[in-house]
Amino acid sequence: MNYLRLSDWESHLVVRAQQGDWQAFERLVDAHRSQLRSLASQRLRNPEDAYDAVQDTMVKAFRALGTFQAGRPVLPWLMRICNNCCIDIMRQRRASESLEKVEFALTSGEDLERSAVQGEDRNVLMKAIMRLPRHYREIVMMRHFRDMEVNEIAAELQKPEGTIKSWLFRARAMLRKDLTPAFEAL
Image 1 (spheres, rainbow, N blue to C red):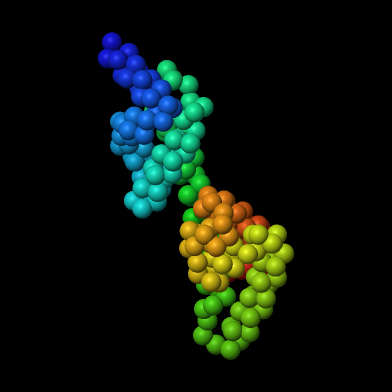
Image 2 (spheres, rainbow, N blue to C red):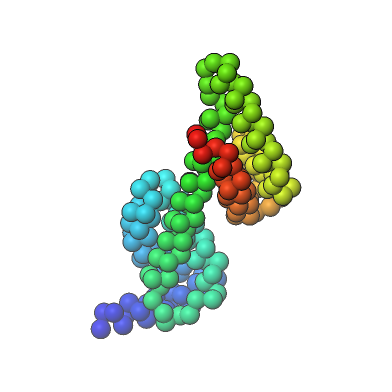
């Protein structure tokens, strides 16, 4: 009987949230926040990334709320969104670590011979960047050579942050694929 009451309560909140009641959505998410935080913490093993995943989950759930059918359980839907957000963060983390490894290899070193090799490596990297489509090339340069944050890039290009993150992820994936044979020895 308690399950039916919980289900009715969730359905009521879903309907109210779909009608634009932000407080109803907050109550709905608050009821499951600890489970979302637990999943994100377990998957990401980093409190800051877990927090970001839960926040992204809430934003995505709110945007997709209009397509959610009231009467269905909310928790599995939120957990699926959270899991996908965790996967996105892990992919971004891997891509960033790969690019940072290449950049570190290009900028670190102690002797002239190593510097000469690094110069060649930098040329390989720059050629790979120049082969990227224009918009990907532009954001890679802004992020990794001008040290701009995603929100700064989004503001300058007048694009949503999500678009910039997506483009940056794709650009890094393209670079990783292009550069893997050249830097396997690193």
